[in-house]
Image (cartoon, rainbow, N blue to C red):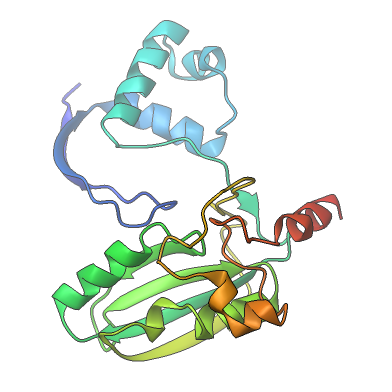
Length: 219
């Protein structure tokens, strides 16, 4: 088999646009592993080996290399409808590439943002945002949103219902001692948080959304 040599631009959807441009070598066995895990991420190494005709030891070695080279990762995703999560697409026109880079670096670890895309067209930056309820979504979009930062000329918001895929990589943080959010803001300085119209940042100790997620998951 001839190895497939290509340049890969790898995106980590939990931490958004962590870019790793590198030369990698893959063959059809690697592609088969990725294909089977995409169908069922719960496959054991033995089951995966039987499907592609390899021993579990060889599969483990291959899988380890794929993960170490940042070609793929194995992660947990949540059913958006089960938890009744609210989603929004935020489209922005950022004045310069330098300002865009600053914004991405500021919000790259924001637990509310599922992905950030550099786009062509009237808007050059797009972000997908989630929240537990409509009040929190409004707070995230209006009070601490990436679109309120310096360098954003204009923006549009589209709130909608997810058709596909059914599952998304929603960050769940069950314990944190952080006082301020990754973007540098403090929930206690927010009027909407004070008025209990926002559940707060999931990356801080002030987050109030775990009970909401727990009750939704049980329903």
